[in-house]
Amino acid sequence: MGLFDIFKSEKKEIGTMNCLATAGKWDTGYKQDTKGLVKFIKKNLKDGTLKKELDYKFVDKKVSDTINQVKTPQGIFYIPRNLINHKDFDVVKAFKITKDELIIFNVLNNQNYWSKKIDYDGEVRTLTFQFIDLDEDEYKLLKPFKKKIMKNSEKLIDIYLELREVIFTGLFATKKRKEYPINRFMTFVGFEE
Image 1 (cartoon, rainbow, N blue to C red):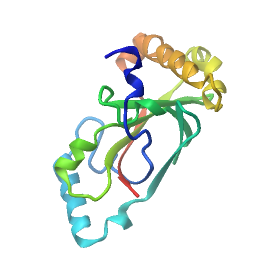
Image 2: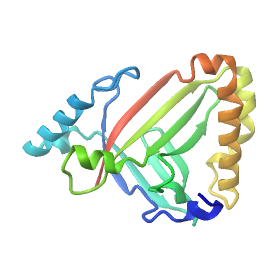
Image 3: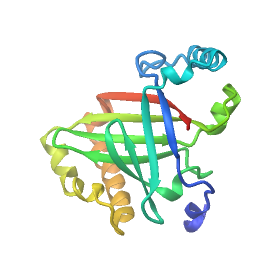
Image 4: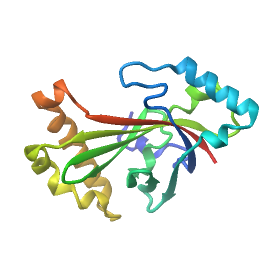
């Protein structure tokens, strides 16, 4: 992959996704009951009752040539626009930092996987949140990015790349995080509106 291949994805948004929460029901974090989840979705699609089960909404919109804003149940996140639906990236990540936690929002480019499992007119994809409770040292490491990562600016893509590097080569490289990387999670199957 060349440096500028990240600009070659076709559809560069997730659109509006109505989502089914799967954590705790079909996904424990240690084991996934994909067969049970697919059976549940198929039954509700057949019965015309799936819409009643979709209790979360994610809304994506373009804010610049390089960034999209996604409104989620955990607030607003900014994601690199050109990585959405890109053939070389399985997951697009976005980040939010509070005094007590780091929230990682993951948009999976796995529509082909879902299209083989269920028959749905729009796109279906997986969306997840990972929650990391920060201790004082971890917060100090990430604090310089706290406000910057939430501002829609021309420098946001550079800030995103720098923060991603700090998280994955700094925070997750510590002994504590190698042993226990995340504290909680939420997973969703999203259905395009």
